[in-house]
Amino acid sequence: MSRHNFRKTILIVVEIALLLLLSFFLCLHFQKPGRENNAVAVSRIITDSMDEIVPDFPLVPETVDIEITKDFREEFIHGDKDRKYQKYIVLHDTEVDSSAQSIIDMWDKNENKVATHYIVNKDGSIYQCVPLSKIAHHVGYGNTGNNEKYGVQDESRDDKIGTGEPNEGVTDYGMNSYSIGIEMVHVGGEGDYPEPQLEALDKLIEYIDEYYGFESEIIDHKAWRRGNSDTSPEFEKYFNNYKKYRRHSNN
Ligand SMILES: [Zn+2]
Image (cartoon, rainbow, N blue to C red):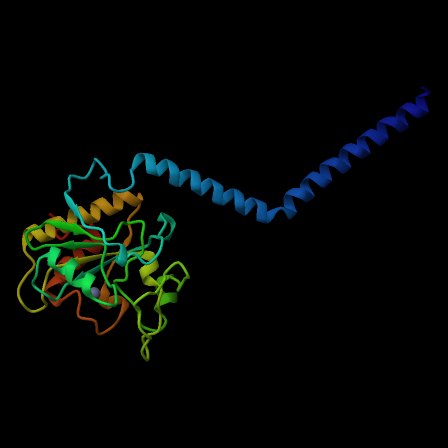
């Protein structure tokens, strides 16, 4: 090989190498959908490893000392709710002074198949009728504009079985798919919430936080739908503490 040919060969090799390098970077640049798929795969892995740390139902995270009576009812399940959709804990009042057990039975007889995930009795005992991984119908339609305000969407994940028609000014339907509902046995205007009930709610919120690995925003039903009665004015002093400390009292 002459000296001239040798230099020519080296140049061709360098050119090929540069072309390969360029096409490699172009491939990376135009493979955005592929990269998104990778992101999904990664979050799946995180979800799976979270399941190992915080086992799924019916197991209870060991760090929270809590007793929950489970009475799941198939009819209350309105779709799947993966961890990635969890954003809010919505507090309610039952507005009837009955036991959680009889309230679940009452809901079950009802055509609209409304339920919260949990009910907290006045004595502090906790009942659960919908798994955390499933959508329950506990808030329904909210004020127009609330889907945007709360960053939620009306999605096909929710079967909407039993859901009626929207009313004027109350047209947004997305909160059920992004929240966990907790009902407290309480009738507005009929006295304070007993201490054992509030302590049980403290633990339940701690438990849900532990389950998801982050703190969901705590709201009440009337924040989603103006004019709704729950939670009642007696809860206001605790509600502020829940927002700040995730407990009913700051002590
Ligand atoms: Zn409510």
